[in-house]
Image (cartoon, rainbow, N blue to C red; front, top):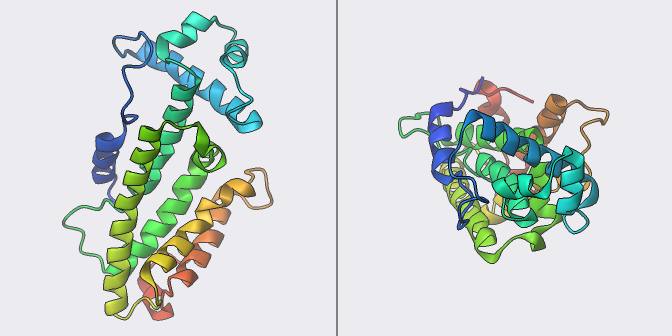
Length: 234
């Protein structure tokens, strides 16, 4: 069975990257309290439903206000505009997905296990963050250039780690592939294209979907069957 990732290290990575990049202080809010955090979260949840159902362009602050039964100043106290709300919703799953390979320095597992677990965690995290995880794929034109650049930077951070581990595993004889970057992109396109077809109310529950897609991703990277002995097989 795969040793589970140690959440404290991943949480530290998320904390380092977790703030929306290049964004000024949100709205007029000066300090965070349990009460204000709950109100801010209610705005995010209402907006997430609308963005998911209608898309970014067809969702307005007026609709978010009506959904919540509040006034515009209430929303603007926490967020400057609709774009900031969308970026906050999109950044949270971005960080969660692209830090799954931020492993502790003392992690002694072989490279193929780290790759296999990382791909499974990437798929599971994408599904766990439905539907906000899909916003960046559906409406990338909605982001500010500096926000898009920050997303690209953290994605490169992930792929650099993934490719290095894949090449190490190939050298050790536990993965079989030709082009490293092409293979990495192909494996990660499995969760990347979920936005176009995944529905949580579908025939498979979320965990069954994770297992099905993980098995496909492992085939893409050429994970050798003998190497699966110590892993949790999907």
